[in-house]
Amino acid sequence: MTLSELRIDMESYRRAADEEARALKDPYLVLDRLHTLYEKLNTEERMMANEVLVEWALLDDERVRFDALALIDDFKISSAVPALIALADRLASSSAVGAPFELHKVDRILRDLGHMHRGKADQDH
Image (tube, rainbow, N blue to C red; front, side, top):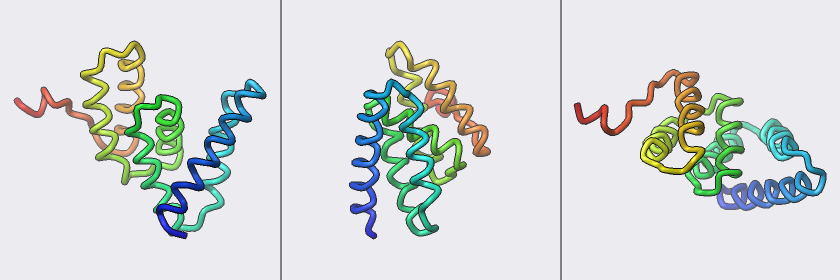
């Protein structure tokens, strides 16, 4: 399986789970399904899935980003650190209502992965 094929599979799998979750009014169904999918992947497929999750973590779609962050956190995907730092910088300058809460979560994930987030303003000094 190629990265492109896995990306398409993961996106359609997530979309189908999201539709089912909405129909059943079960907000945790998507994460449960994505956990199950990820756990079934072999080592090579997990490496590619990690790349997809990094991509998702940087999307503007908050629901997809939420799922990506949860999986990155749960499976301790350290290759996501550069993307998480970029996301934290973006959230730090965002005026979105939920940005401070999401920034707190991203900073916690970074700490759990052994990294501290230094905002762009902090790096200049």
